[in-house]
Image 1 (spheres, rainbow, N blue to C red):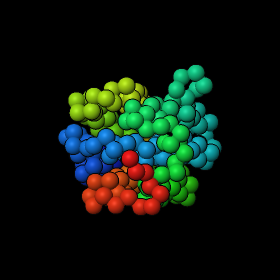
Image 2 (image 1 turned 180 degrees about the vertical axis):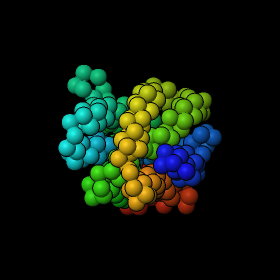
Image 3 (image 1 turned 45 degrees about the vertical axis):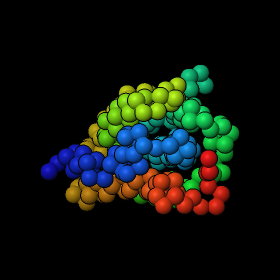
Image 4 (image 1 turned 90 degrees about the horizontal axis):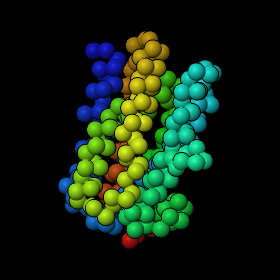
Amino acid sequence: MTLEERLRAVGPERYHHRHPFHLLMHEGKLTRAQLQAWALNRYYYQSIIPVKDALILSRSEDPAFRLAWRKRIVDHDGDGVRPGGIEKWIQLAEATGLDRARVVSGAEVLPGVRYAVNAYLDLVSKRSFLEAVASSLTELFSRDLIVLRVDRLRAHYPWLAGGLAYFDARLTQAPEDARFALAYVNEHARTAAEQDLCVAALRAKCDILWAQLDAIYHAYVEPGWPPPGAFAA
């Protein structure tokens, strides 16, 4: 099996498209409050994506790599004229009925979500540069999930229709980013050991995404035990 085949096989096995929280979302079985909890907590992850990408950028000595990778930061932070992914996620949260300041403050983020997201920063900072790049390859799997999610959100939660611009943009951004990262990993992971590390890094990123949903599900679905200080509708 080639490295690319091994990386692509991680998606069906470990990506969070099969998490029970996402399944409930796609079946239209979440309440407005549960969607609010998801949007508020997921914002914390969205807010660190450009930080993560800046950390990866800072570790590269290749100007061509930095030129290509910095696009990701603009995609999420915006360019000063057009809004980026972070602003679009805030708009999604507002469409659920949340106040912008409440979301941006991060004060009510679940501890489990915070720990998982911070673990991603640790991964791209402390593991090898090649592993950091490989960890971004969840974008290989995201487009199919986004297509399904937008379709189901529009069908089951029509009041969210004005807040879905984030997903529309990611339909083109994510595949572009994945193509570049995959080509880089294929070119630079030359030894069996390096290839194993890349696959493990992608699995670790999938675990981080899954752990965030675990925390949200435990707090707001079953058994429904949000910890002190966490979001409450």
